[in-house]
Amino acid sequence: MAEYITITTPVSRTMLQPLACGQQVRLNGILYTARDQAHRRMAQLLAGKKKLPFSLENQIIYYCGPNPAPAGRAVGACGPTTSGRMDAFTPALLSAGMAAMVGKGERSAAVIAAIRRHRAVYFATYSGCGALLSQHVQAVRLVCFGDLGTEAVYAFAVRDFPLIVAVDARGGNIYEQAGQA
Amino acid sequence: MRVIAARTVRDAVERLVLEANTRLRPDVRAALQTAAAREKKKIGRAMLHAVAENARVAARERLAICQDTGLPVVFAEIGHRVAVAEPLVELIKRAAAAAYRRYFFRASIQPDPLRREKKMSYFPGVVHIDIVRGERLRLWLLPKGFGCENKSQLRMFNPTAPLAEVENFIVESVRSAGASACPPFVVGVGIGGTQDCAALLAKKSLLRRLNVRNRDQWLAGLEERLLRRINALGVGPFGFGGSTTALGVAVLEQPTHIAGLPVAVNISCHALRSAQAII
Ligand code: SF4
Image (cartoon, rainbow over all chains, first blue to last red; front, side, top):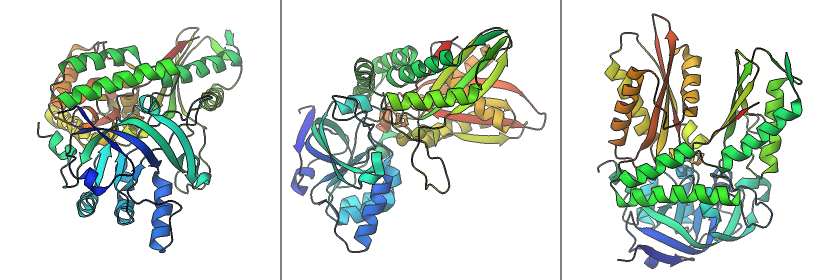
C-alpha cells in the first residue's frame, strides 16, 4: 500500500468513502479557512435560511487563523486550531453540503454522528506545525467576512497538504483508538 | 548603580520575540529526536518527524513555529544594583507588542475578555519581575499558546493527601489535556506557596532545559516516575496514539502553609518556545 492517498477538491462522497481512520492523505485544490467567528456567522445565515457567501457543496473547511504573510509569501504560519470549539456549528454546515473538515483534536459525539449521517470525513493535520504547512499553500484569496482579519474565510490553494483521517465516514475515530495501544 | 538604557531593553525584547517564535529550543529539538528513535508506533514516528521538519522550516524561513504565537510571558530578574531608564514592565510590554507586529506574528490578545467587543491586539503581554542580587538584568520570553494553556489545572490538596493522589492528579491532567493541546507535551508542575505561587511555579518550570536534571534528587525521581506514567497513557504525538505523550516533566517547589498543599499543572505543547537574554 502506498504511504499516502492523494485527493483533489472538490471531493465527492465516493472519493471519501474508502478512507479509513489513521490513513495519511495528501490534498490538492482548495481549502476554505474558517474558525470561531466565521462559524458563528455561517450558522446564523443558515439558521435564517439565507445563502452563504460561498458554496460549501463538496468543499473542505480548515479550522485555521493564519499569520499575516511576510513579504514575498502567500501566507505566514497556518496550522490548525482546536476543532472542538466548532462542534456546535458543524452539523449545520454538514447539512449545507460540506464534505470534510480539517483541524486538530477530538470531536463531540453529536459531530461524529453527523459525520456518519452525511458520509463526511474529519481530517487532522500536523498540529503546531504552521511553518511547515505554510509551504504547502501556494496562493491565498479572501472569500468573505474580511472584517474578521485572521478569522475571515480565505481560500487556500494547496499542494500536497498533509492530512490524517481522524474520523472516517463510518465513524471510526483515531482518538478513541489512541489510548488503547 | 548601573543604569541600563531603555533602548538596550527594547532591542533585547525584540530579539527574544523573534528567536523564541522562530527557533525551537535546542533541548526540545534534541528531545524530539530521541523520542522519534524510541517511539513505538509508526504514525507517531511520522508525526515526530513532521514536528522536527517544522522547526527546520521555521528557522530557515524565519516563520513562526506555530501560527498561535501565544501570549508573550516575560520573566525578568533584575539585579539590586541595576536601574532601567524607563518603567520596566511597560517598556517590556510595548517592545514585545512592537516586535510581534514587525515580524508578522498574529495579534492574539483580546483586550476585554468577557465582552469581547474590542479588536484583537498585540498588547499587552504578561510580565513577572523578581529582584535578585547583582548588576544584571535577565529576561526570558515564553510565548504561551492557548491550546495547551487552556488545559492547565490547579488543585488545593489536603496536607495529608497521600503522594499517590497528587501523582494521579498530575497524570490525569495530562490525559484530559488530550489531542487539542498538541502533544507531545512538556509538563510543568508547581507545588507549594499559595494558590497563585503554585501556578507561577508551574509556568516557570517550563524554562528549565529538558536535558537538565532537577537538582533535588527526590524531585528528580518524582519527575522520572511521572514521565513514565504519562508516556504509558498512549495518547502519542498529536493524539494519534503512541509511546511519546510527553517529552519531559519539570517540578518546582516552595514552602507552603501547614494546612495546605497547592499543586498546579501547566501543560506546554510540543512548540515549547522560550529564549533568554542577559543584559
Ligand atoms: S497548543 Fe501550542 S502547538 Fe498547538 S496550536 Fe497552540 S501554540 Fe501551537
